Image (tube, rainbow, N blue to C red; front, side, top):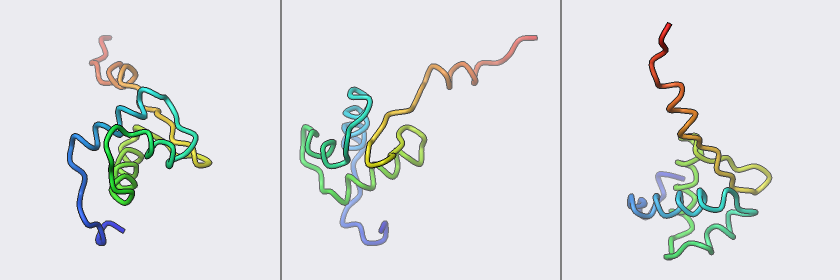
Length: 84
């Protein structure tokens, strides 16, 4: 799929999709998320963004639902040096 892309998403587009999911917490379907975006995005590009977000551990797509799972506070907790 990635070899056939017509164009790669810009950073502001990736951040727009990420922000939409984060604000909602979850969407019942990819299509509803895609239609809710404040600017138009090619569906192929949109799918690439979702692949990236899923591979980076920010979202999961289960039973068609797009769910935000990224927890920066938990990550911060584990990155702090432990004092003994």
